Structure formats: structure tokens, C-alpha cells
Image 1: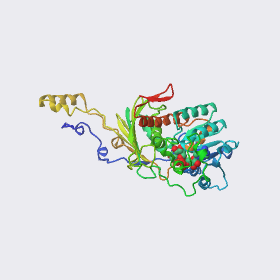
Image 2: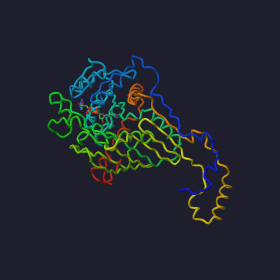
Image 3: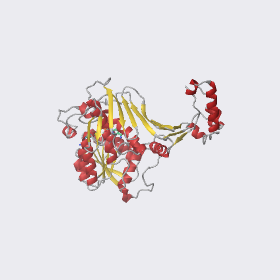
Image 4: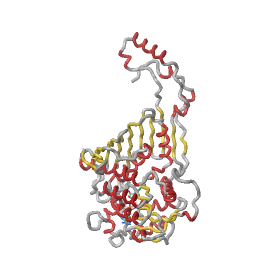
Length: 454
Ligand SMILES: NC(=O)c1ccc[n+]([C@@H]2O[C@H](COP(=O)([O-])OP(=O)(O)OC[C@H]3O[C@@H](n4cnc5c(N)ncnc54)[C@H](O)[C@@H]3O)[C@@H](O)[C@H]2O)c1
């Protein structure tokens, strides 16, 4: 607690406006395609795409695609027949081709790119086949189900010269672009500490999705769903709540950590996995046969900073990333971004000198004032009160993420969240789960491309 009677206010003349200001005015950011050309798309430039996997996310994508200029959905594919109808409804085209077999889509010469929105364990095979068929790929996050999958996918994309976008759409969000601008400006000073969480408190948030009444072995291609996963008899819980099971998903790591890590990597221009990770957590509430915890906290070690992540399915804290720098703090909370500077102008010691006799203390303070003639006032009221931004109502970063991908398909210039970026953030999820399940520190061995115990 500072006891200094000569407070900063006595030394520093702030503008009255700055002192009176209570909080920053929130600026509404306008959507802009970050890495895209703004030019209108000629009909001859229309990109024809198909969605492989038209469940929850696939349908969201199909709806979003209607707002992306210059693209056309020409086929949809899913293993569950009712999702053919859902996809046709989402894309507002009841006659678009619908199939269970994605190979028939890859065989079509008029399909330029595919959107892979299947369960995570099936990303790899479809991705490899799409690369071999010469299609560009938007692959949902997390790109990989295992570390080995990720490197096989990167190799296939490079070998076949494919444009790839991985689907953590915040990387294309106007909010994150502004956050990156603030981070890159140096206004935060040096940032050694980043802390993020994403908490949800509902059965739906914990993936306890209802099973549709028509789900059966007749309406679902169960063997194709299993793919390379261990053989099991038909189980709709595994099909619809796959995120709970290690054979198909990565729990909270693959569902939510990957978004937080993608945002942090994008803002800090990081393109490597953490060096080490240590997780803690447990399964406390959703004891429904799932294999993943409903609380996980992970401490990541990067070369120049540390990151702590948490996902908790037993509290509704929302989504948060905080960057704590030597000159200021930047917070992303749901759809709001705020920056608050710290007043780092010099000030006299105001604590330990109270262990000095008065005469020495006064001498010190007099000398300090002589050595520090009136420091400059803060540059402006904005500096004093910080900055605040939000996205406009109805803003969709998925639309922007798609737009950036399709512009990369046209320009052949890679997007930020390409296969290498997506592989690195996926490794972040695998590090977290390795540490949780092994009850040990997970170390990234970059030369062996493996996670090992620390
Ligand atoms: N970016 C985001 O915000 C976001 C949000 C939700 C989900 N996701 C990701 O999207 C993917 C799908 O998630 P979801 O919630 O839509 O799951 P879902 O279970 O609702 O849908 C997945 C669909 O993939 C289909 N499928 C699986 N293997 C297939 C194959 N070989 N051929 C054709 N179809 C196949 C299934 O039939 C199923 O309908 C996951 O990777 C998930 O992590 C991303």
C-alpha cells in the first residue's frame, strides 16, 4: 500500500478532461476482409465448393456461405441421411447433390474446394484424399486428432500445392485484428503473461446433445463414421456426442482451447507449439460415461511468455483472453476488446521510505523532485481512459474466415491460419491432453515431432 503523501497527482498535471473521464467510448468495428481483395468477384471467378460433414458446424458454414461473395455450394455430403436435408435447407437449395460418399465429390472436376466439417478423427483421411484430388481445403478445427495426423496433413498439402484454411474463425475477426494492431503497436510494452478461459455451464455446452428420433443403423453409415477408430457396435451416443470420447475428439482441448490458442498465436505472431505444458482438472459433474474432464487448466511455456488456459463446464464465465504487459493490459471478453494503459511515468518511492527517519525521507523526496522536473502529462484523455471496441450486431467472423479462404484460393496467397498454423495450435491441444492423462509435464520434442514426458 503506497503511503506517499506526495502522490502522483501532486507531481503530475493531468488534463482535467483526462481525470474526469470515467470510461472509454466503445468503438464499433466495421467488418472488413482482413487479407482479402475488396474487389467484386466476376462470375468466371466463382469458386465451387462442397461440404463434407453437414452436422452442426457444416450447416453453420453453409448458412454463412450465402453471405460470402463469389462462391457456390455444388454438393453436400454426410453419413447421416437427415443431415442431407438439413444441409439443403441451410444452403437454400433442395436440389444440390447430397451423398454419403465423399469420394464421389472428390471425383467431380467442377468442385474447386471442400469444406471438411466432420468429427475430428475423420479429418485426416478426407484431407489427404482431397489433396490428392487437387482440391483446396477449409478444414475445421482442430485440424488434427493426433500429432501424427497433423504432420501427414501438412505434408500432403505441401506435396499437392493446396491452399488450406483451418477453422478457428477468430483469426479472421475484426476484433482480433484490432487486438493484433494494439499488440503490435507496442502499447502493451513487454507481454510475458497471457491468461485465457472459456467457461460454459449447460448440458449443451457440455455436448449432451439430444439424439434425433430417426437415428439408426439404417439412416447412419456407422462404419464410415468409425473410419480408422476402433471397431464398436452402433451407438448413437458416440455418434452424436463424439466430443466426449478419445477415439473421435479431444474434449475441451480440441473444442475450445484451440480457439483460444489460435487467437493468442495470431495476436502474438507465434507460429510454433508451446515448448511444454502442464494440465490439471477433473471430471466433476458430467459423469455420463465420457472420457474427458469437465474442467481443465493448462499452463503453457512459450519461449518469450507463459500462457494459462482454462475451460470449465461448471460455470458460465464466457470467453476471455487477457494480455498483461509492462505498459498496459488488453482484454478480449466475448465480443468486446479493451485496452487500458498503465501510467508508467516515474514516481518517487512511496513505500519503503516509511522505514526511514523523517529527515532522510524528506531529503530523498526533495532530491527526487529536483531530479524529476514536472513529467509530461498523459498525451490525451484516451491515453488516460484506454480504448474499447466491439463488433457490430450480427457480425460473423465465420463469414470473414470463409471469405479470406476463398480469396486465398483465387490469389494462391496463403491465409494466416494455414496448415502449419493449424497444426501448431492442434499440437497445443494434444499437449494439454497428454499432460492431463499422463499426469506429467508434456514436452514438445520438435525434432522428433513428438510429445514426450517432462
Ligand atoms: N469453428 C467452430 O466454431 C466450430 C464449431 C463447432 C464445430 N467445429 C468443428 O467442426 C467439426 C464438426 O463438428 P460438428 O459439431 O458439426 O459435429 P457433428 O457431429 O454435428 O457433425 C459432424 C458430421 O460429420 C459427418 N461425417 C463424419 N465422417 C464423415 C465422412 N467420412 N464422410 C462424410 N461425413 C462424415 C457425420 O455424419 C456428422 O453428421 C469438428 O471438427 C468440430 O471441432 C468447429
